[in-house]
Image (cartoon, rainbow, N blue to C red):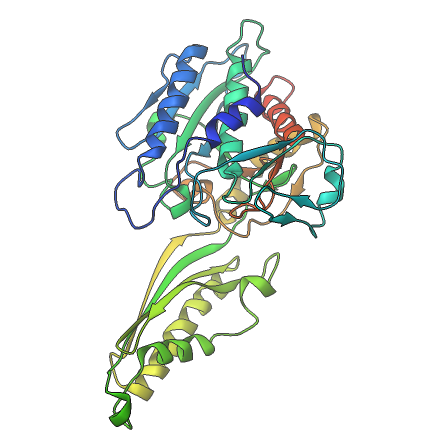
Length: 400
């Protein structure tokens, strides 16, 4: 019988970064290793139908104990962000004394408002060379710890719990091949949020934007009135976006344009963006801004100089969840029963639950307890993971 901390440390040391460049599902072989580990553990607990399908989605069902007719799903993703390359090397701080945290390679965690509140707690951090992987292996560990409790001989009463672990969430594909009929939940929750207490039922509308520029390269000595430098034109395209509407200058419900990568030379250049906004109207306006800039640049440098490809990724789940706020209220009551104040706030991002909600499986998002996802300064307090297990118990238990 392992603890949630032990499960978490075990899972994060299985490398499972997803890869957007790979079209297969899963996009990386390491995700299979996580899936097989989880299925083996679920089967050892006695979850008879624990399985991994041909696309690396893990499923399992824990039957109800007592008279509780609901079938509640709990979902987390097995892949981790590629924001920092490399395997995870976790470090444990048994009792955080407060102040700056110096990691093994000299990276310093400091200046964050939440740090003082963590004094005296056991923390798990990295060595400063990788992400930690709490997004979302903390969610995986918390659900697995719940499963261990619910399959024990002295388990408390609870409803039927449907467990699902997805691949490739970090590259936007986690819900693509999710078997909703086979999962067979009345509704579900993703356990994929941040600080303890987060309860989220609205998220960004999201799109990707790829801008490609075709230039004309002429020897610099004879380039006057002939050269069209694709790299410079790409920079000009970017300069026409609203400069304050980027992630570094926005918060809460404010949307943004985010330049995620760029490459190019005189002949060819590419800019990749993500577009985000909670308001559907402003979301559409942002996409139209990109199209207008493209038309302006083409009018200036010639038709077909710039191409702008925009693809919607997911939409704000609030539009469908507002019809069933009792699901959100149940989660809030579970937090309160576990002694945690629920904090209802919008997600400045997305989860598998956003897409699943539009696919017919309503799915708000719950905290994991972690901080600073997708970076070397990621960390999670062990007490927060333990408390989230209590929250999940309340969520599926008789007192709800």
